[in-house]
Image (cartoon, rainbow, N blue to C red; front, side, top):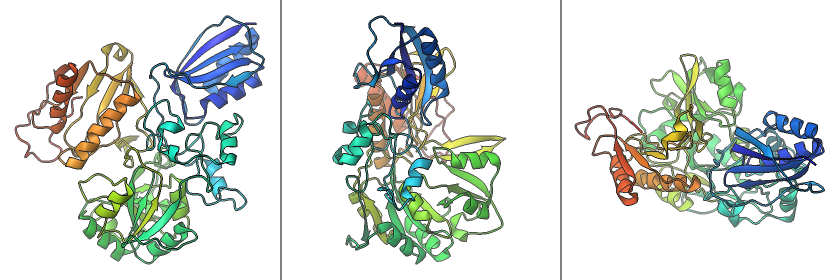
Length: 502
């Protein structure tokens, strides 16, 4: 019987691609197998020539929502056909497949947490292969549970059955869990005492209504939350956080609530609702929130809830909440419970915590409509670490590591014609951000089996990114490449007077 060996490359791991192939193969009466490996997904399929041709043609047309197919290579396959089509174990043969980004809660999971008869009713960590955490919990590739922070939560029998069933949308969903076996919430006061509450989310909603400030551990870090319509609470947060002028980010229950306070175009509406769920800067409308939300600014930065936790939090509120990064200004967003208790003491009145480790910090992404197009102002949660495909010619350039600038840093790995742009790191003059920067570079290199042949830096010799690039070049005998940059005579220049030439 004829056979085809099919290589799929792109964002094809941890996104439900193999179950989709399994369904498609059975639909077209094929036998064979599919598996993950270091290059993506490999498919061996046997059937009639006509069935094989239709099967191959349908693969790009029936991708799961989080998948992205960069290439599909088809070759002939000899050998005898097996009796059925199976999903088989991953094979480790190098690394050349990107990790997908964390994704906002899918409609199916939203329906489950809203259904009182569902075992995941109001469970704040509900997810499946179509949504949920990815980069925020991953330590290594291939993206398997044992290399994520979910390894601390062994699945119960019901979750195991879902995980092992190719017909279930949670098949090999590495963060799969439920109230029986998954992470748990708890609410603490400023003294570290756990508050007795049957549902901590109900309790923290009441506290926000009363004007308190809550530190909330989310997907990629902590946020500080308060009622955006409460001027006293907003002003107090601004003073305690030492953020005296920059606008606060907002989260609203739904589009209807966003539209009460802003003017939203169709393009901006689409951006708000996409799976990355970024903050979108919108023109303020006639109905006002507290003046301290965005003093002197005619724009408001809104996002929609992107995890079940946030969905359950804001659905009980009649006004948006401020949801600003959980840090002191210019420091990185807190990710660890103990660190948050220490750093946010004196700001937060209450802490909504959970026991799943945030492995990688991810700030919220920011977009704005400019000149008729949505532009990304800050790339983070929802976009990184997915690779950007580059035009022809870049594949021959070799592996290049671009270190980024000193301020608002992000770095980039160029590999096989793809640009792998990191999440927003921050200003490297802060020691904690500098440490975060180095750890993120190490992680991205490990995730992509990346060794640079060239390292590109800014010409400014005082930039910490430049200095670290020199250290890496000397350590790894990579070719150190300095590229022309605008004149930067001193480190005392105003913010923004720099050029990234990575």
